[in-house]
Amino acid sequence: MAIQAALEKLVRSTPQSIGAILVDWEGEAVQEFCYCDPYEIRFIAAHKAIILAAFKELHVDAGQNVLPDEIVVTSSGVHLIIGSVDQDYSLVLSTDRSCPVSLARHHFREALLEIRKEI
Image 1 (cartoon, rainbow, N blue to C red):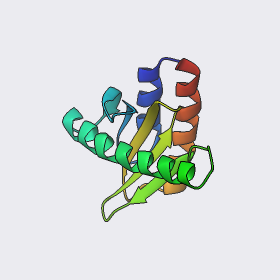
Image 2 (spheres, one colour; image 1 turned 180 degrees about the vertical axis):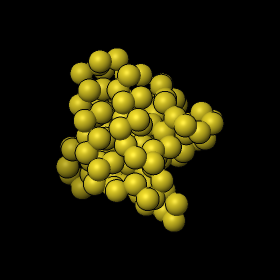
Image 3 (cartoon, rainbow, N blue to C red; image 1 turned 30 degrees about the vertical axis):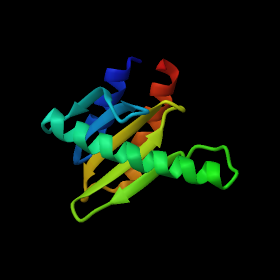
């Protein structure tokens, strides 16, 4: 399955989704699918990639050479799920806070597997 199709499937199958984006190690957008202005999801992803990079550094500093599978950040209005595709790419999903986070994580993990096959 192509990356764009995996992103679209993730957003369409996750209730109250705002969008999903694949970013590179610098937080630059590779591909996205969203119901919002694409600039918004790119802006979110660029900053959330920084969070993931910080977590990666924490693991390396602690002597662990493992990538976090996913990080869930919940604010007053949204859930952000950030996950490593590999060393160079990350996936970010943004949903409204009313979305059940466990369901969003389920769909997120499925998308990660599909995208890993493509990269």
